[in-house]
Amino acid sequence: LAVALPAIAADPEVWRLTELPFLVLAVACLYALGRRLGAARFWAATGAITVACAPVTLSVATGFTSDIVYLGLMLLTAVVALRWLDRRGPLWAVLLMVALTTLQRQHGFVIVLALGAALVAERRRDRRSLLGLGSVALVALVALAAPVVAGGALFTLALVLFGLAPSFG
Image (tube, rainbow, N blue to C red; front, side):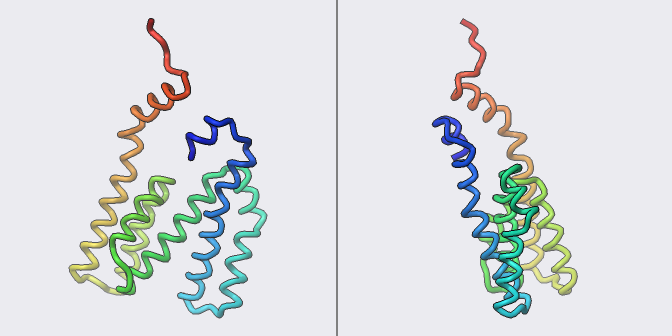
């Protein structure tokens, strides 16, 4: 999608519409987190909608458009990680979300620290928890390194696709 929109010369207004699903995802995840942490339905919904309608959120949505994507992915990662910590969710879902979140923004690596802190707070040192935390850390490290490793090749491919590569003939 990131390559398709500029290639078809779509207006920036169209680009902003691609954020809408991630804003809805963020609202749904905030509601789920609120309910999981004990808020009544009304207050969980009020909190989730307030974040979506906040002036800061809306100004970021029109400026740094990838921040809304990161917000949605980060909140989904939090929901999935809480389910895993409660032993109700699969580890593969946490690994997938950590990878996507960290690929979107390097700050996604902080999830590893948050999960580690949660395990320490719950005094969980069982094999499943420690292996899970190690797996999450490894996936986050790979996601941090992937853009650097692939950066040169992807940049060159983008130059060729848009006809900006230097010609030597």
